[in-house]
Image 1 (tube, rainbow, N blue to C red):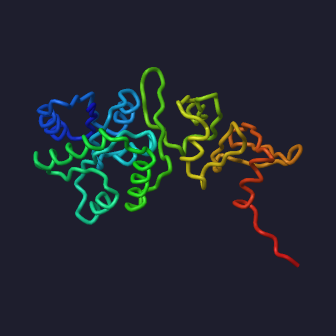
Image 2 (image 1 turned 180 degrees about the vertical axis):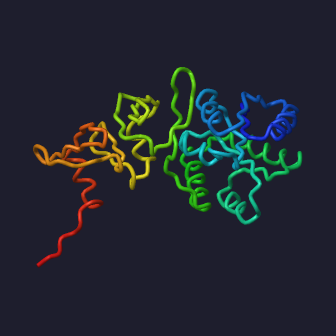
Image 3 (image 1 turned 180 degrees about the horizontal axis):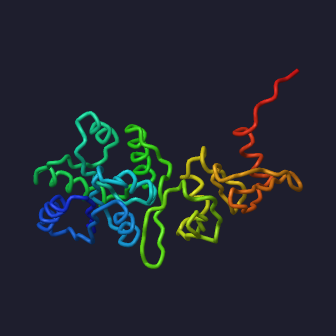
Length: 256
């Protein structure tokens, strides 16, 4: 089993590494001390499973899952200090967890279950469903709040509120933010599904716009609209996509 350890506390990572080192079928492929590094490690290393601390500053364990996407996550063992009430949500969805402080015996129980899960043909859709229901049980929002972007070899988390509009670039997306343009490995369809629809609107096949960045709308040709942003950028809201979202912005007319 290729495992990744994510925890913002160095002693906690050291304890888990020490206990896992005694397992002959375990390879620790990496560790991460915060959510941003966890996102990068998951994308680069593609482990079989991740021991994921839930409570971390800035980007917590759930934020890591939101950034990667539920469908793309490996098997997750949550490491948490949640109380018994919250842990019932993990139990109901049959998701593995370690409650801090945990004993070596409890870790062995989790590892045995993890081995069984990885050995059988586990349907990805089933795991995705369980994670999704867990998010719902804990009242978690599934919308993206930050995106990891890279510039000059350094990575940082970009709040989505700083993005004015997004354009498709084949299998990439170009984020037009206040500070400049960032390219991320994601299709526009994937971003459209994960951005908050009350804040972002897909206005064409190749464009998503942040609604608060819009200055005005101008009727254009053939039912299209010209979308003018606060910085003067002009985009096109196609008739096809305007029809899809009309009910969200137009009041129904009273029948006479």
